[in-house]
Image (cartoon, rainbow, N blue to C red; front, side):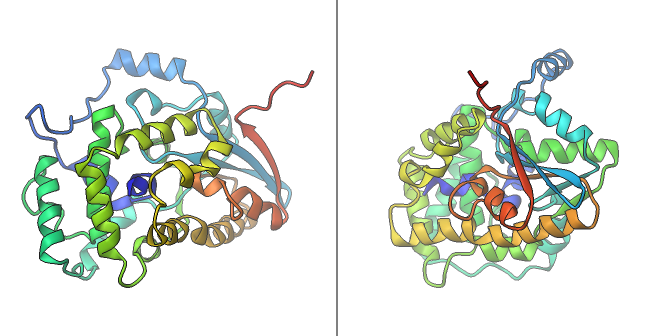
Length: 315
């Protein structure tokens, strides 16, 4: 059930950044900050990754960027097309600003208890990831699973610290650029919650994938597909991710992806109509399928022009 690592699991990503990895060779490695020399070289040599559109209406343009919520250290630097979009905009819009999370978490109800069997499996997987005892207990079950999958991704050099969304948010903070959330914390919690009665089946599937070591290969493929801007490959994600093999998994995939897109499009439209020139960063899987954000925005009267991947030159 490796889908969880690809969603905008804001709380899981935050925890993955805050929780230190263990020192054992069996622990997921803790990310190492680049040296000043590495940072300068990576910034100078950064290439374009992901998907980018210019969206125009009401006499001005905004940009829609299909991001990946995890990345590698040298990916945390924008390429030329994204830098140009940044220079042509004034507001960053993301699915959820992590600054909104703390107060909402403090006010959230305690998560529903799991069966003793699944609770024990979660605890065992947390120990295998070298997390402190009880570190995940305040989270809903699916976000506990997301955190474990994000930590497992560290074994291949991926981390939420290097995700494009966080990179752009940090850049905005440095420049004191406004950051707009397209969703509230509660809306994200509601979207990530499985349908009644399906949590334990989805959790059991995800824990089984972790135990059997089947999380990392689909993530590597997803990252490569995203990096080259392969929209067709993303559109076929459900056929190769191993995360849509049961009716419950397919329903949850639709819930956390397609069913959020109408609201995201509505919010983008409202912010753009208010006169803001936006750089919108949303997970790349929201850009594919019948409810793809570029398609929904075109239906709302936007002129949508693809910028990344760059169109092949005409012959």
